[in-house]
Image (cartoon, rainbow, N blue to C red; front, side, top):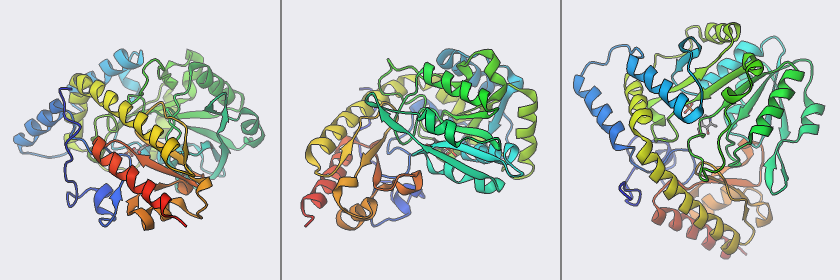
Length: 381
Ligand SMILES: Cc1ncc(COP(=O)(O)O)c(C=O)c1O
C-alpha cells in the first residue's frame, strides 16, 4: 500500500464529534473515518489557506469541471451546468426537499432502517412521514414492494431513497432502481436519491446505478444528491451537490432555500476539486483496506460474538449488527456500559435491537473494539 491506513492518529480534543462528544468512550459511531484524507486534498487545502483570505466563496471553474468529469467518468452522466446546485451539505438538501415538496399536508415515504435524518426532515416541513421496512429476500435486503403499494397515498409527494443504503450496506441494482422509479411514476412522487456512499462500494463488480442513470422520461422526477465527503473523509468541510434535471423542480427546490442555508465553505470547493481530480489512487487503496476490515469484522461477529449476527455489507464502512438475540433491552447502552464503546443505536434508524459499528479505522483499533464487544458478551450473566 502506498498510503497509510494503519497508523492510529489521536483525534481526541481535535474538535471532532466522534471522539469529543462522549470522551470517556471508545467511538465507533458517526460516519467519518479515522484516516488522514488523500494527499492531493491536503495540498489543495494548504495552498488555499496560504492565500490567507477567506471572504465569501464562489464555485470556481475548476470545481465545476471536476464535478463534470467525475459525473462523466464515474457515473456516466453528462453534466448540464444549469442542473447543478452546490450545497453546504447533504442533510440540508433532504430538509429542503421535504420543505419544497411536502408542505400543506404532504407526505414523505422512505424505507427503514435508514440514516436517521431521513426519518426527521419531514418535521421541518410539518409533513407526515410514512415508512416501510426493507425485507431480507434471496439473501439480500430488498424493497417490500407490496407494503410500499399499501402504504403510499394520494398525499405522498416524495420518496427518499438512500442509494446505496446506509445502514444496510446494500447496493441496489439497475432493475430495482428502475422499478422504484416506476413506482414513483405511478404515484406521481419525486425521487430524492441520496448517493453519498456511492464511491465506497467494496465489491466493484456491483456497479452503482444512480438515479441520474434512469431512462430520460424519469428524469423530471429526480433530485440526485452527491458529495465527495464520505469517500475522502472531508465531511467536516461541508459540501454536497444536487443535480436536478427538471427546471420547475429545481426552481422550487432553490426557492425554498431562502436565507436558511449558510454560504458554502471556501475550503470545501478546493477539497472537492482535488478529491475528484486526483483522489482516485487513494480511494482505491481505501476500498481495499475497508474490504479487509469488513471481512474480518463479519467473521468475528458471526463466529465469536454469541447473540450477534451480521449480513456482510457490500458498500461503505458501516456494519449493521443484529443484536436482538443478545437478550438485553438496549444493545447500544449495553455496549456503552459493559464495554465502554460508543456505537450507533439502531432505534433512531427505525430498527431497535440493532447497532451500527463504523469500521473505517486502523485494523488494530477495529480489533480492539471488537474484542471489547466479545468480552462484554462473554461476561454477561
Ligand atoms: C446517507 C447519508 N446521507 C447524508 C449524510 C451526511 O451528509 P452531510 O454531512 O453532507 O450533511 C450521511 C452521513 O453519514 C449519510 O450516511
